[in-house]
Amino acid sequence: SGTKTHSIACIPADGIGPEVIDAGVEVLKTLSNASGSFKLNFENYDWSSERYKKTGKYIPDGGLDSLKKHDAILFGAVGAPDVPDHISLWGLRLAICQPLQQYANVRPTRILRGTESPLRKASPGDLDWVIIRENSEGEYAGQGGRSHIGQPWETSTEVSIFTRHCVERLIRFAFQTAQSRPRKHLTVVTKSNAQRNGMVMWDEVAALVAKDFPDVTVEKMLVDAMTCRMVLQPQSLETIVATNLHADILSDLAAALAGSIGIAPTSNLDPTRQNPSMFEPIHGSAFDITGKGVANPVGTFWTAAEMIRWLGEDEAAKTLMQAVEKVCENGVLTRDLGGKAGTKEVTEAVCAEIQRIY
Ligand code: NAI
Ligand code: MG
Image (cartoon, rainbow, N blue to C red; front, side, top):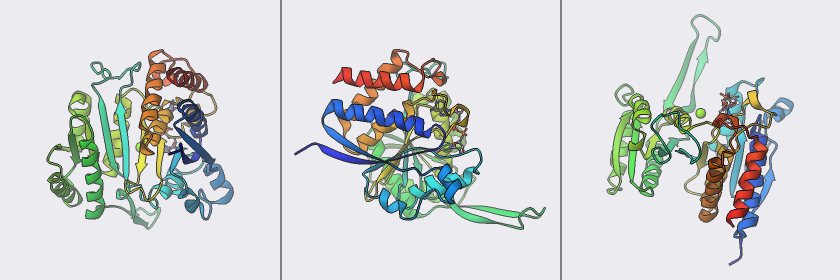
């Protein structure tokens, strides 16, 4: 057996996206060279708000078919000050996630060694979660409409869609993830007291799927109470599953509790592996710091580790995270983590640490 080559599509897109993706590619190249155990081919796609403003489209005709040729997609961030956010999000990110059936959004969160949580009593080890977000329907299904636009009697609807098929496949994936973690503990987030249709079905499906995973401890939490639990008893949680909207909000809270939105990764997975999965830092395009060289690349490094782990390179993924945590411990931190280093310094330090490990 020779060394395996993985083909990666890069979509840096907008704002700090290109800055952090450049850093991520540099670190990945260093990792594959130093380990010698796998190779990566990168192909760049210039799909961005600039392209949208010039051509009226984020994704050119046939674009999705070219994406499907790759083993994984590394995504930066999309959003520009002069394009409405719902246009950019639906034009690029959701336009990839939905047709490629990336129905499970996975967001690991933990306090990295060398960084601090705003929670006074929490240190590394006290907060180690994986949040699984429904990524194909729910509150972001895109159903609804507007009538009498601009009139005082304007009407708008935003309809949540919960199908048994999609809820079940997602909850099953969440149980499998919980089963692979040390405590095998799953929290199912819901709001079935107030939302008495979709959320009640969600709970019923969770109870049915639970029967196939007798070794997983499962509990139900209302989403509002969940916010308190995350802040007050972070140690009590391990794997969490929630709807598209609920998990969107909870995972930003999780990122902040772990120290900064600049360090958190997210994976948009097609667990059937029929399509490439997409990996991205959870932060947006951050116009306020674009072009200043201060964007934290750690979210993209962690994203890169999740990506190669999904591609089967477990050892290299572990090494990459080990290098990132060592650099944080050495105090090479960007401003959002209380340090003074720039994107370039952190990237060089991580590359040097990878070379030192091998
Ligand atoms: P944002 O994540 O871009 O920025 C929020 C705050 O966090 C800003 O103060 C920013 O400077 C800081 N920040 C973010 N990433 C950082 C990093 N790597 N290092 C240091 N500081 C960092 O969220 P915001 O401001 O709400 O949105 C800006 C644009 O990004 C909007 O157009 C929005 O729609 C888009 N967006 C795109 C996402 C995506 O592509 N998945 C996700 C979130 C927002
Ligand atoms: Mg969000």
